[in-house]
Length: 162
Image (cartoon, rainbow, N blue to C red):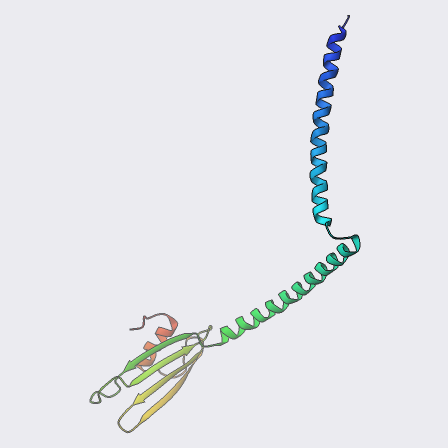
């Protein structure tokens, strides 16, 4: 079988064109890579670049230490927040029928575990009397008055404030 020389030349020219296109693509990619490398290294020698990398590693260690300190501070804040009084119930009332105004009050202050105290202030013409009752996990060991129960229920979220 005889192949015409012109066909072989056309095939070789096609391969040459493909090779030239491939070389152009390779050249463009190499040029972009060199530009990126040049931008990265501009104004720096290898010694300065090493100092920069060491500085970044030192900064990273410092950030990790700060992160540990911040996590510890947040843990302490959460612990303190749970121990603080954060629930409130207050009821104003008239302790004595003939005396005008709601000058007496019962106030319940509870923490995260529903423990705390109830303060009851009874106002009369002779003076003002203040009583404190301890609350442990939403319960008291002593009998509560109507207003004290209402203040405790408000603090526990069972009843809306009026």
